[in-house]
Length: 342
Image 1: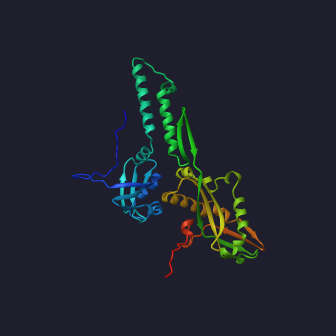
Image 2: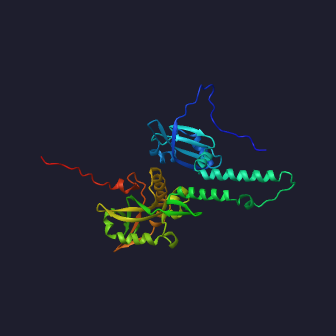
Image 3: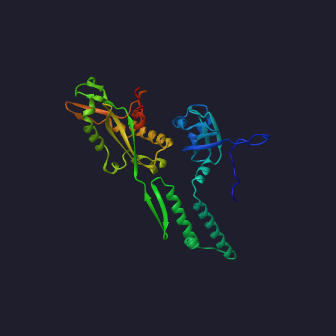
């Protein structure tokens, strides 16, 4: 016998009616059970996930733009609108949040597929109700024209929802898909460069990145050599286990570029379709981790020869001046106002 449905929720006594607020979930974030319990017990304290996506959360035109954190184990969640703060200024406990998220992603064909499977099982049981022992191969239950049509619809709908697919059609029993061309976005960061005069440790000192702009090719060659053969196609994305990122972002390749007479770190993103604000926050956070503790931590320990000196290049700096931002924010286009003479 199935266990009775259990729901974790706050009940309000003698409430005359419930008037829910309209909330749009800008980002869903699965987290571990211990992390979920910790956040729920300290909602008014600053939290990494909430602070990371605080720019997505606000109230506008009567709609709350929120993030939804849910427990991978229990499935319950927390709906949060921090209104730009790093803590849960407004929040609500959402039972079975994981199921809601997964159900939201279901296509019409998937629901139809489940109904057809349940119908075929019921018919098989009805036809064999008097038998003592039953045995059937699943393909005998599902190998029907109806199932074939539903499966084709499901494949079509699933492909249409994939970011890498531009268009998808069903022709003569086959599903045909056209892939999107890859778009590009550049993220820029300042560089920290240490020079070594091959003397004592006192001879190692930081130099302005602009002093190394003539050695851009030397540095980029060293960056290319830092990736193994099977890592060169996708770059920093090679080690990413976040499906939301890997489905949309094909590659993230670091390099250095001369801009405004200075040398900057650059990460070229190649992605399917546009990256919205939530995508950029997630991708930037992942790449920042790679630049500070992942790939970048190893790269900054390898010397690069530039004449009589060696330099060590870091894409990460713990100072308050550090940033990792899209090109449009670091190098905005000049706004030329048309002026008319008198």
